[in-house]
Length: 506
Image 1 (cartoon, one colour):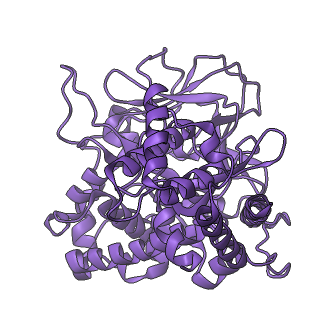
Image 2 (cartoon, rainbow, N blue to C red):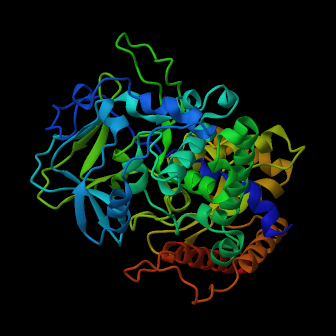
């Protein structure tokens, strides 16, 4: 079998990472708010500007265009290291969003947009408060888009709403039909290091043979299917869906900024029907915070469902406000955000799913399930995404040697005879379900050895040689924005070569 055939199923779990941030219930005192309250912002419901949305998309006169030319230039062209106030659009201000006056939006060419403080801030200070009504959710998007969106998945509806809002802000004469103009203009215009963002030719050049290649192509195909579903449901009322570029921008924005959040709790402890459980959610303004190994802030859930951005330590003037984006593998970080933290160990998903062949005995399947549980526990996962089994992995030990024990275990379980299966099962039953370590030390016979050698040879061939040095995407500061992807593929190649040498050794 080709590497593509086996890896497509094995690597789909790379995209199954949850991108939300954990929200403990503790609520510190609110810091100074630099944004107007709902009362100060004026009369009307939070999403009153959105009521003109359907009429505007249908060609009926919408909200009056705002004089935003200078504003757009300010957010899009500001130079490196410049701080500016955090943009609080009128829809968010009307919701009662609170931003500490010391919190600033910083533009750097090295990391893009981020948050920083202009003056010292003590630990425990609430830098931002986002009421639950201001969260951008799939349920909200479906209400705004109207009856035509009733059958759309919440994530598709939210993607459609973001795409239309961004389109209006950029090419619609500065229309602000969502009341989110400043926020949308401050978001990245492109996502060059995100695998999803790469066209097929570029993805093959940079990621061919890797789990990220197959997973990102699958997600890109899914995004196109979702775009067609939005066109079918909303027709001429959704202009942005007719543009693959607008849609891909919104899909990339969601991948890097949205997460799954539980339904907002009511005062009596019940769950709000306004935001269904597990709805896709973007926390606006908080999503500008960059990631760090040791974050300076964290998100907490307040008693009324609001999201609080809280300083974890004393911050000096100029310090960046950062979050930890959750515990994800190296591949998951690259897939979801287009970068990986230096401390994240590069663990490579192999084109060998942790499943038995059709018709395998129940005992053999049980042994494979024990291996699945072991892999999920070591990876900090609770399960696979969408029923897709996890894949065996390659990684380096602390001494720098390649660990291919999971691949060896899979091959041995698949090829051992029934007597050996029973013997291994008896050992595991006496060890609380732990498979014997020797099962992953070497192939137990010619059949598993040939299986692994053949698979690794095909995989190494698919990974190919180093990509051409030319054509690198660089930032204005001269930084190679594709360097994380190049480094990932190079490490995949090195790990596979080392694994092949090990299983081929006498």
